[in-house]
Amino acid sequence: MPHPFLSPPAGIGEIPESQATGPVAELYGDIRRTLGVGLVNLVYRHLATVPGALQWAWAHLKPHFASGALDRQAAVLRAQVRQAVMPWAACFPADLAARPHAAAAARLARAYNLNNSRNLLALTHLLGLSAAGEAANPAPAPACEDPACEPAGPEIPLPAMPDWDRLGGKDRERILRLNRLAEDGEPSIVAGLYRHLAVWPALAGAIEPALTGLAARGELAAALSYTVRTAARTAAAEPLPVGTAIPPEVDAPMQSVLRSLATVTIPKMIPLGLALHAAFDGTPSRPAPA
Image (cartoon, rainbow, N blue to C red; front, top):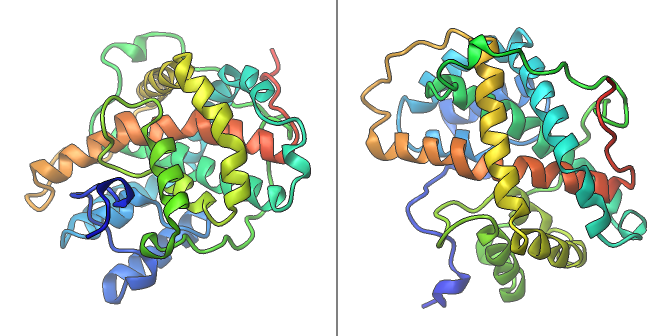
């Protein structure tokens, strides 16, 4: 029996991309094409475990992805959170961008940043988590147009996410240590970016001291809360029609997981991912122009 520390959290099922067949595989393909990123995030892989749930969510969300509305809102969110985590650049090794595979790790972080920010806004709308009364407040600042602030260009193929059972013990330990940062107790969801970075163990090891220090000073938890509030304000400033009737297949446990993704896991990883992209890329983020 595996040691519990080396086992992934129980209870959060998913259909991995490599195991998707039939209608689920078709939906995954549509998600990748629509989002323009070569991966399907956990929120959709988890929804796929319940017949009809992914179809329901994607039918409501795809029009807003296709129209660009969620992209616009996500760009605003990224610009604001990126500015908040700019000081974190000094916490990472100065030569990180020059290390082997750093450029590939930057592309991976960017892919997660794009998807995580869009998916957080999507869930905020879908679950009705927009801040009450926020629509009366001034709208969030526009997204930064500076190329150093918002990387542009087509996404290249990403490495496959390592299978948990094939990871070495040290890699699993590191993933679970990192995954605990900024959360109280034992998380029920393993963030995909941490697991994906295990493709490059040396880089994953190089960032751990910086992230551990940020967590010890309370900065990761503060950034998580800030990201949740910013997503709620951004969604309230431009409400998107997503329907209000949640179908029976999206039962209480599924809704609980979706809410946890929207209020903990994804907003935890957006500031982390933005800081990691800047560190791996070697171009620290700059504030949005006044």
